[in-house]
Length: 457
Image (cartoon, rainbow, N blue to C red; front, side, top):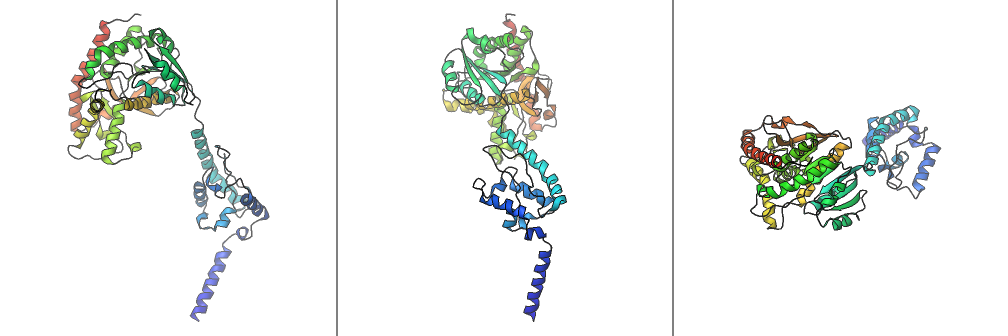
């Protein structure tokens, strides 16, 4: 008796569950069966195509939000629902559509279903299209010192940007081969070479961004100040040409010592009557790149999540990573902050010594400079959410030039982020005060050099 009663109970439960399923699921309409049959028989539609063009997973979630638990439906019933158009080459389907008004949902439920997932599907499809179809290139970039250790890899990285329409490479020698080599890369920008002072002006015509890595590299035992007399003259000459030929361009100074060469460039531009402090940048991005890398390694973080603001200058103790302001926020053991700070400050010297006279940090510098170029191009292109650290004219401290986080826009520096210097730790406060005398001396040295050597107006 117990067995019979148990069996009878199960039969009743089955009957109840069948009564809750719409009749069109058990006996689907001819139109729906016909459509499903064509889907299964079509050789051009993979069986799992529902995962493409808007995403089967996202679609199922949207349907579930309508109160439909599809994940529990038998597989054949899911296949009866012809929802997603397929791919055609690299172009994703633009929308998701219900192809039968006589499906088990009924007309009203169908309409509600469309309303629930169609906007999301369109938005996802548009984002997918944007990733596949970069915007048209429209900016001209000049690299002055393109045949050097930084210039060559930097030119290669800039050549890869979809925002660059023309890449002008200038150097005093050996630049033709670099340009010929780069011109074989199948990216949109046209590569042109310019050799020697007689072609410098032409290299700068109608340029939007000028990058200056020209100069001699550090060698073992040399400080950045040892480079001053050589590189100061190089920067002065090149910036004079920029002032004469493309005064509206963004100017990126890489040539060391940046703490001095940026003030030199500013003074030259002032003497030429075209100085715009919002468009002159000392490229300190390498300090940020190093800080992010070293902190991520120490704390076992994903690099993509790490952002450490670095302020001050671009040499020795003037480089101050603000670990208390980093994202994500992490805690450090006693001594860890000082150890990481010194590692970041001395990273350039580590590379110089490791190369044993064969050069300085060229590849990582090129990478960091290319990142700053790309950020500038994005800002010029109208992106309203571009932030970088850079050594610029500033009022954050009593010093006329100071590296900090800035917001970039179409006209250059839109804002200097002052919040980074608020609420510093005791260690950071002391380090900030300690760097100021050295940075001040470097700035004054650069200004004095430029003022003693007037430019031709």
